[in-house]
Length: 302
Ligand code: GLN
Image (cartoon, rainbow, N blue to C red):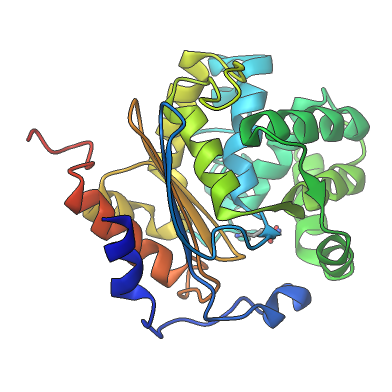
């Protein structure tokens, strides 16, 4: 089935590679990797599953889980929020929706606030906690792609502005530019579709990495993180995604999507060409096919 999903969409030519982060613009548009990892740790792998790419916004889901583990359901609900913005991921207008509140952890404003919270306002502590925590999700030590980090850090005005606005509204403790720097480094962690599928399978498995056997977050945290991914994981397209596919998911601008079937497993799909919202076109199609073929839609009674 995974082989069929890959074969069906491998030649699908819609979408274009991200251009807002200069180094991502050089990605090969023909790359396409697909990995299904079940909640017992077994994997089905097709195509470019071991090609490295920056994790980008997919990190938001896992850093959110770590922040939930540290600060709890109520604090995160209050400080970062759980409602969809209906706006693009890098929107500044998000602050106008709710008196300077970042709205949810899956858009940049809320993700920067979440990263800051993870280290209790100390960006160095945030970085240590998130790099160690994301490595536990992946079951191996993740490293920063320095070229991606440098490229993004040199063209980061918008995220720096988001950090400043958060601080201006009293919603960020500590130095905002350094929090944004930790967030930027977080987005530059290098992963593969195989890593992403295992990270997703860890949430599917109630917070235990099914390959290493280590608990990364509690069962309640895995549930809460997946709820927010269902509401906001594909930015302003989250409603359409849930309607068509019926699974919590998170996308990143390098062209990866992770979709999680709680209790069952996860799909990690990677292909650089994106739609207008910044979501990988082939990844959406392949996950949609697998969700239907494997009966994974959470809202289906049979
Ligand atoms: N690092 C990117 C940013 O902050 C992440 C965007 C994304 O993957 N959607 O703009």
